[in-house]
Amino acid sequence: MIRTIITPENQDVSIHIPESYVGRKMEVLLYAIDELNTEETQKKKKTSDFRGKLNLTDEQYTDFQNHLKDVRNEWNNDI
Image (cartoon, rainbow, N blue to C red; front, side, top):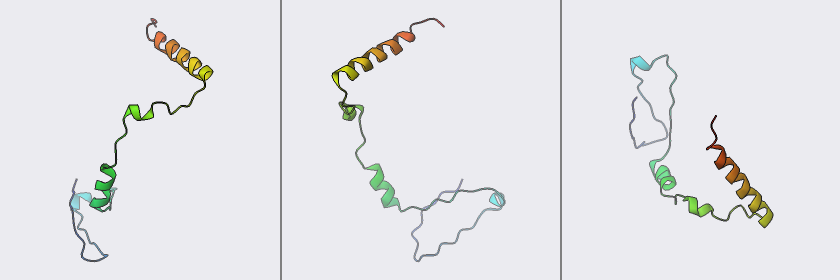
């Protein structure tokens, strides 16, 4: 694998492909590093950020909790 960072001086970029890569499928990615850094610095969500997002009625909540209890109990059953 070859990885390099360049700063182009115009809109054209030429690359030299090693002989061992000729005839092989390759993936070429082009992105600006500052764009990647912007995506990485976005706030990472925690599981607690999703608390209360289901907006369940009391009946739906009870049904959901019963379902979870049944699913968890299945792990204790011998197969």
